[in-house]
Each structure stands twice: as C-alpha cells, then as structure tokens.
Image (tube, rainbow, N blue to C red):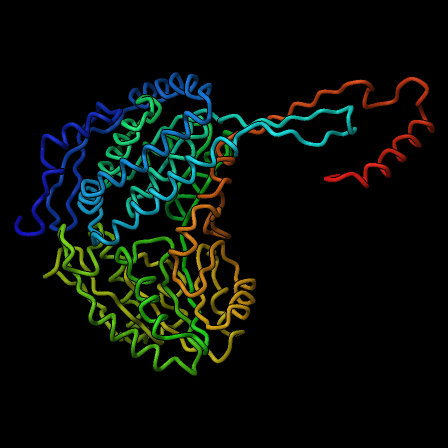
Length: 520
C-alpha cells in the first residue's frame, strides 16, 4: 500500500484494538475490507445470542438511571459532542473513508450533518420533552398534563453508505430522549460506529447505554428487533419490509428510511450555470451511494441539448480516485457487489437501446471498486435502471415537452424519498413541488438543502419508508405519550340536579360558551 492509500495513524493496529473493545461480541472474527485496495482492513468479533442478551440487559439497566436524569443534563451531552466532532474531524474522516471508500469531501458532509444535528438536539430537547398543560374536557374543572417518556431500548440497524450520519446521527435523538441503544451497524462500517460511540462517551454518555453488536444482517438484525422496544432502520425497501413485519408481530414501533429513485426536474427557465454543477453534485456525491441521490433527470426540451452537453462535459472531467487525500472528486464504490450491480444496470440499459454520454465503465486503474460517473439517455422503460434503484454513479436524462410531462414522469415511481426542481420562478417551482409525491423536495439544490436543514423533519413516502429523521419529531418519535387528567369540583358525567335533559342542555350551553375562549 503506497502514497495516499497508506493507512493513517488513526487506523494503526493498536488504535483498532482499542476501538474493538466497544463491541459486545465474543463470537468468531469477521473481516472487513479497505475499498481503496480491496485488501483486508481489520477483523472484528461477532456477537452471539448470549452476547446480545447481555448487551440488552446492560443497556436496560443503564437506561433506568439515564431516563431519570434531567433532560437539560442529557441535552448537554449533545452540545459537548458537537465540539468533539469538530475537534476530531481528521480521525473521523480517516475512518469513514477507510470503511466506505468515499472521497474526503463527501465524508465531511457526514460530519457537517451530525454536527448541526447535535447542536440542534442539544438546544431543543429540554423544551420539546417538557410536560405540557393542555385544555381539558371541562374548562377549569379538568386539568390536563401531557408527559413524554422514553420507550426504553431502541434497536438501531444502520447501513454502510453513510455510517456516521445514519449511525451516530440517528442514535443521538433516541439517546437524548432518555433511551438506550442496541445498535447493529453494517458489518463493513463498524469502526465508524465505534468511534462515534467513543466520542459521545467522552461527552458524558454512560458507556452501557450504547451497545454495539456485530454479525450477519440476517442473523443479528432479527435478534436486535426481538430484544428492542422500538426499531430505527435505514436500508433497502426489501429488508425494510422484513423489519416492519417482524416488529409488527411484537407490536413495536418502527422508523424506516428505505430506497429511492429520485427525480430532478430542470424547467425551461432554469439557470444552467447553477443547475449543471448542482446536478453533478446531486447525482455523484459519495459515488451515488446515497438514498437521496438523483438517478433521473427530466429536462425541458427548450434547454435539454444545452444542459445535456454541459452536464456530460463536466461529468467527463470528474477525477475518480482512492486514498485519504483531496486530489480526486469521486471515490470508490464500497464493495465488489455494489460494483457488479452498477455495471449490470448500465450494461442492461445499453443492451436495450440506451446511449452512454459519459462514463459507463469500471475504472480498475483507480481502484478495484471504482466506476466512472455515468450519464445515460434514451433509457427504455424495460431497462432495470428505469425503475430500480441503482445506488451508484448513474443517471438517466430524459427531455420533456412541458412541466406537466415532467411531473407525470417524476411521479411515476413507487418511491417517494427525495426530489429536486431547478427554476428561476420560485412560485412555479413551489407549485410543481406540491404535485410531487415525495417526502423531501429541494428547489435549486439536489438534496443537501432539505437534508441539512435539521430543524425540519424529513421522511420517505410510499416504498421509501415512514418515520421521522431530524426536527423535534425525531425526539418525539422515540417517546411514549402519557396524558394525565385531573378532574376537580364537578364530575364529567351527570351529577346532582343535572341529569337527563337538564344535563344535556347544560353541556350544550357549556360547549357553545367555550367556543369563544382562546384555543378552544
């Protein structure tokens, strides 16, 4: 291993040994690979059934005291974590890159998102979870307080593509809400989860609250669900359906972010100087291995030729590479399996008549799992990549005659995760957005504007899942609601002389009267 591919000191054997101690596992070792070279990165112990039981028991024991801690003290952990993330960004970037193969700049977007989220949650948790006084059934006589209590042990099953954002970020809301975590990261990206756990423990989290378990998804994933009170899952729609079915048998809540086949609409009035680089970033960040990534572009015919020419030209100039430096634009795919899927989608489309305007091939000279960013056109509806999520650096461009045609094609999908609209007319763009069946819509941006706005809750529609990430809803979604109503003075039913018709008249008069009260 040479040059920029050489492992940095943050991944030295002694450091990896220290991180591995955070795994609740005594089972056989499993190997992970360095995508930059395809060579072994490290070996990690897997978790047996006994390990899982012990991890769940430790987490539940720690959660009891954590839930009783004042919310302001729990929230302070999030605020301290932000500082640690920023201070240790170099080590975090090294680990994320080593496990995913993505470019350093793309790895940094994970840190930005989680740093924004930690501060937001640290600031809003106390007020969001504070008891609320609400109007009662009978004004004055019914006093209502609503409480939020943690669900207990939250099972977190996170993917390999954004291991810091979707592991640490998703786990943080559950922890600050007073829960414990039983976390199964993807086997390829355990080190990122372990480093995130190490940082939040340094920020003040009791160590037993966050248990990390390791092993094959088909074995350890169901075991996590069976031991949890709620499940947060990010991954494929097919696996998400299995998670939902298993959780439903136990009547526990799920939060699911699943697949996407995300569209972009380029209107005739779009500023192409902004739309072209914006579309490149939206399609090829993290080598397209992003649930939010744009895989379909519908461009108005009035600007289609110009946009397509410029978009393909910029894509041609992108540098594909590997290593821990900043000397390339697009990194590696994470695995041989992902490379094969991407290449199969492109080969299938071309065989059915699609044309390649840029890319369309692996780049073994850059790295064993590298693939050129690829621009296709004339993709037929029979091609696999027409409807299936590719999850790689591949996008199909289709000219359209009108906004109506663009909306119809963009909406022709079972997924509804993310969408993008480029237009100089804000009112027209918002009108189009209202017609798109998608949980997130970005105007004059690909995905980062909505995803990075952590004050706003986001989630998928249709086969893209359900649940909440970000916003106050992320905290509320990992709590239970308890309503306590105290009746004073008079009962809620018939009483004293007010019975039968007189009671019905009294209550009708009361209801008419309260209509004039604020908030009633």
